[in-house]
Length: 206
Image (cartoon, rainbow, N blue to C red; front, top):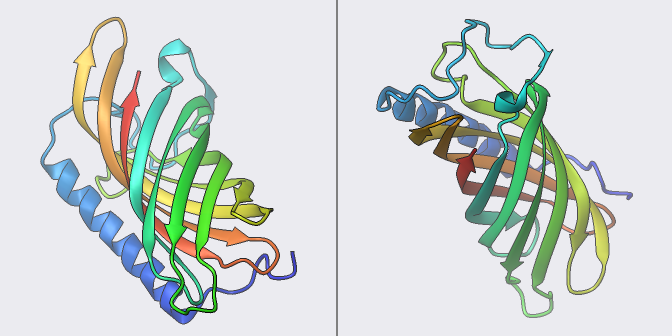
């Protein structure tokens, strides 16, 4: 894992900073246009008090994702798609798993393309409160195997994103659909290329 935590390039750093700004703007715009009551907090604190949850607080969900991944080095940007699931065993912490597949062609004839399948276990921290910029956002980290056409490597990825509720159903429990954006920076062991991925996410919470 000699290059596991090598620094990001200047371009990637700037791209990630721009992404964070875009996420913030998107959260403000989307929240201003919805009157849904789901995931409203009774606390004004951005950082929820850790507590055990009952069945209605587990927030289980399934999701599908699709977006763009850009490996460092001599590779073109390409599509990534996947699915996942998660739940909240203890406020405000979430656990889940995701599986994704991506393909990136080489910019040069003498460099092979990359086809990757990742199976990542993820932990997340979910913000709350009354601030539209923050209350639907989360940060986290994911880790697990990164499988390409040649071998299997170890991957580690910091994550930032948000999920905006767009439709809810009220019965014994509240269920709803959210749309959002999530960015991750996948660091891969050995000499494999790290990469920045930005995905749209459609989630069903039940």
